[in-house]
Image 1 (cartoon, rainbow, N blue to C red):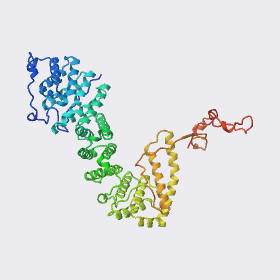
Image 2 (cartoon, rainbow, N blue to C red):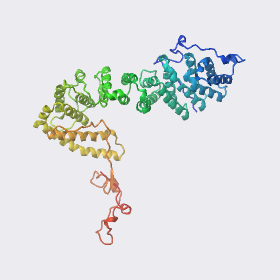
Image 3 (cartoon, rainbow, N blue to C red):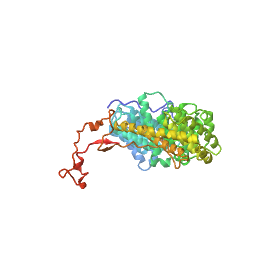
Length: 544
């Protein structure tokens, strides 16, 4: 096995390392002298490793809490466990002893020495799997101890850091060891929930010591995967107390500016899944984000549009922030992605409109829609932008039905809507054709499916506007859920006509079929048609 990478247990960014523990000597539980060791004929310094282990086993046989009477002896056993000349079986047994009884220890200095020894074993040259597995199991025992005192939480935080480094180091550790580290991290999460979740979020931030880019990406992916697991696993639900939810939400908001937009979307989804956020339909996430972010950059607009996907039917006045950023008065650009984010924020404002700002939003949105559709003969480059504005106008118009119906009766407005509807109906078959060609090449994805969903929504809304009535029922945004791609069906006819008007590439490979008039010699009863034998002679082209 290649030489393992050094497992770092101290991070400058947290300003807590194992050599400078926050647990001061004055706060450490005094260690009683070992009554059993006093009866040994040999001095403690010359006591063999096997004798030390035997003494500890005898001490905890009746009461595991008596392990605190042997804090110095436990530290000595780990010194012996680090030595290569100590028998391997004894080294493993010593580590397993701590994995079983370490949760009962209350001596901060001894715990610090134990953790230091565990890290030395994991980062040392010995690659024996049994020894390394026992070491990661020993780290998992730190969870219950770290929760006894806030000053001891560093034990589980740094323990989680070590375990995650073992998990991602494929060159340094064998699969059984990395699997054991993964299970140990699950145990650590269960017993020290808050410190470990804090550490996971810390791994996602950029406020850390510089490392190799590849290593950094592995760490971030591992941390994100663990956060999703913690947020979605039912067994962890009892751990999400109201206090911890507030703590985690504050940490998520703090690191949002330091992550990529993909990680932002994942973190927003995790934050939205918190029970306290779900109960209030995403409002705590929205207010926390707006309290720490100004809408003066493209990144801020895109981020808020992602947060908006997790906000339900709530009443919240967004107009002051939009007005401050100039998003109410500035025209919506249908040719840029910024214009799409702009339209999505206006949709969020419309759906969360309060009675006090409904009039302002209605006039603003109507003006934006009229500017974007123009004479109705040209579709904007970003169909989603038009979709978001029409959905926003519909949402706020339903809160002002008299004014909205009056607008829908305007002949000039309905004429533009009819022209726009005709343009959508003209482009939709071409879009379906293009998407199916991509499906044929296995290169179609969520974006192509979303475009089809956007066309569908535009057709529904514009059809209603053209008929001078308000769209009825709920219309879900095309970007709010996954759409299915068109299915290519197998049939008699070819996939598509070629560019020269000939047969498709599939049918061109098949010989021509000579049709014969039906006679008694070649006639088959109707009941036999469609059998497996009859299907063998059919063309195997694709049909749209």
